[in-house]
Length: 324
Ligand code: ASP
Image (cartoon, rainbow, N blue to C red; front, side, top):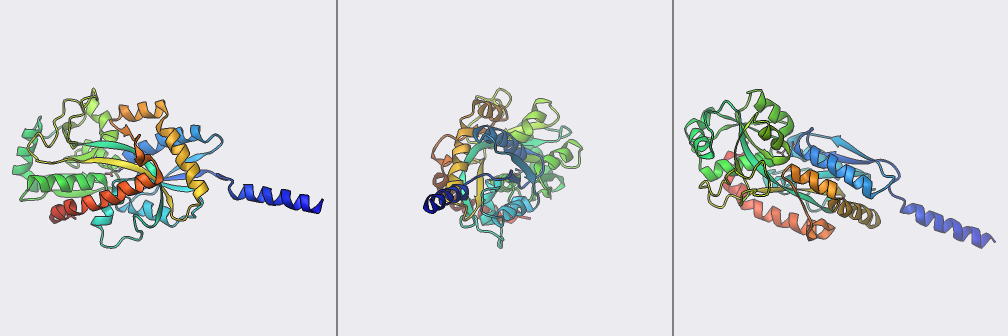
């Protein structure tokens, strides 16, 4: 009898060792409300459907191009209850910062990739240009007077701005104005405090539709032909910036050392979310494409980020003269 009770107890303990989640799961967004926050809130809703009974809370821990929020997750308990939604910054900051308090490939458990998002070059409606060609000519002759907003060193908007100025070979760089995220940066652009910005379609689509900003180009190598709103915007490549191709992406991360059973459960929920037609449609409406290939797996996403870190190295070196 004693043996039976002991056996039962062992099996209860064994089960409870893997009981997950036991409290709300915090999704840390390393920016204030804006594009990454939008993606995260839509993902939280889809993952909640895939994990009945689980609660997801979105926390905005902003600053330093996303590295403050990323560091918060790198140092959190590795129990699967504190996760990070970040983007190409995971790879660009590994090249841009001399000292980071975390290592992109060593300090996280990679859970999987979420989406790919094109970026748009947008400007204040007061700019005296209506096409990309006119815009570029205006920037070339007035560069030194213009203010370009971005979301901190390592943010996607920062990377895009660097690459764009470098590709144009601008003699006189623009003044770059860092914000904590492109949500507040967009408000500054609407308020006339800054002149232009390169930002994700998940943030700019609404303003482009409302015509409250001028949209000049997309950063992808091909036009966004299946997006009714953005399909007529030229690419930077066809506008003469040879080889310009920037698509950003988001992924989901836990601290390193997260138990395999927990990361498996989270990856299963992530993969289910990525197949959720409602999530796919919401992302599509904002110009984002939900990932369906092997990058949705833990290893597949990690291999992709390792490759991105390598590829962005020379790009960032070449553009380095414009770094803040
Ligand atoms: N993703 C950032 C945000 O949500 C912006 C950026 O990376 O440029 O504000």
